Amino acid sequence: MTIQQDLPISRIMQTSILHCTPDIPLCQAAKCMAKRLCSSIVIVENHQALGVWTEHDALMINFSTPSILMRPIAEFMTSPAHTTPHQILLSKALLITELLALYSGPKPKNRSQFY
Image (tube, rainbow, N blue to C red):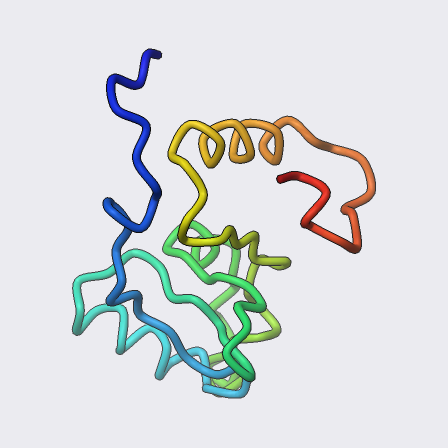
């Protein structure tokens, strides 16, 4: 893939991302997603992305016990959430994404070593 114009990701990124706190009940997070016609929600605490919950994650939940809907979203999120500075170039962001997808060993404590 060739990038004609290497832009900072801030030029193409979505800024109105659906988010919630880690203690929000699963049912409330799902309602927010349905209302916004969104397939994922980012779990945030103290302005830091902790994880993400997606429609795919929902497929892994056994809904035969209704009380599961009242449990906190943090119990079901995929974590850690990988973030990147908004000024990073698109080519570098794509490379980081590919590296994270391929990386199967222990997750680094300091994600900055990827950029």
